[in-house]
Length: 125
Image (cartoon, rainbow, N blue to C red; front, top):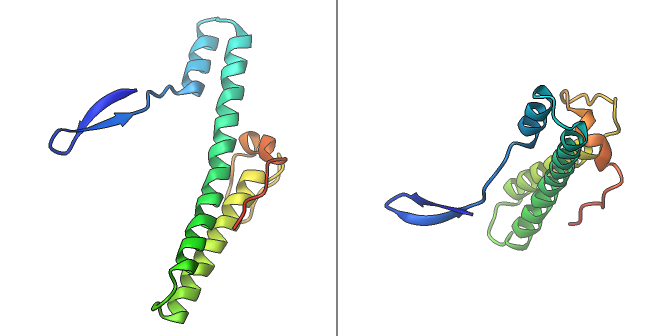
């Protein structure tokens, strides 16, 4: 991990990242081994699916925290916040688990990378 000074020289550890799709494309363009570029694309899809499923779980976790700390919050405001978080979780989960080739009315999503997420574990509240 690389260290980077942030705001007044406070050290912050940042992960080293690599754009797997760009690397896979570069290998293909240069005539490299297609098995390597294919493996890189599979790794990218797996990471993408994982991230897509972590997002709805994060919304559910936030919903649980808001509900737990609801004392003193206006009931109508709380209802709006809870509804918004639940809707967000549902939409993100649907996006992450949509079968390949299906379009979602809320917008166009890349089904190619999401299709392999279909059999993933359900989110919990």
